[in-house]
Image 1 (cartoon, rainbow, N blue to C red):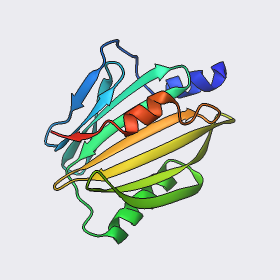
Image 2 (cartoon, helix red, strand yellow; image 1 turned 135 degrees about the vertical axis):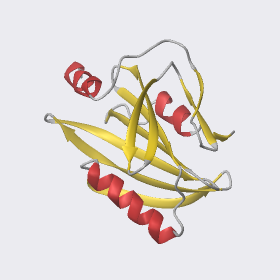
Image 3 (cartoon, rainbow, N blue to C red; image 1 turned 90 degrees about the vertical axis):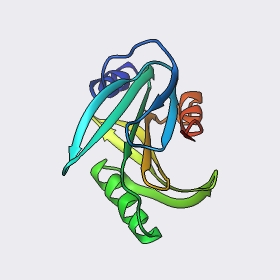
Image 4 (cartoon, rainbow, N blue to C red; image 1 turned 45 degrees about the vertical axis):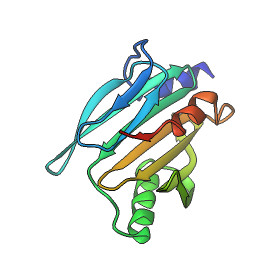
Length: 159
């Protein structure tokens, strides 16, 4: 298990201690982290995306990002979910779309091999009026879904 934790830790930044609600610039959503997440900027075309992530236990990584993009149709959301699953190297991904808290929500999930260890990667895209919140949990298969994962996925709110 410690090797899985070390591998997942290599994917993320150091952790700070303060828990709280996190807001994203130019995004209508917030989400809750059980500690103070680290920040990273990513660039897609001319858009800057703020990514926040936290490693709350030795087997769990929580990650969130918000993009100023709203899929215009269910088909476009399915394509986005497939793209995320493929780019995450998920083997045989499970993809679904539902309504949750009056929002369209897309979910992709599956197992990923990292340095010979299998972990669960579970992503959730919450489509708002003008933006999409992307929540990701990477976790040891035997621990998924942990209380960290459940609370994280249930924490999003409109600002």
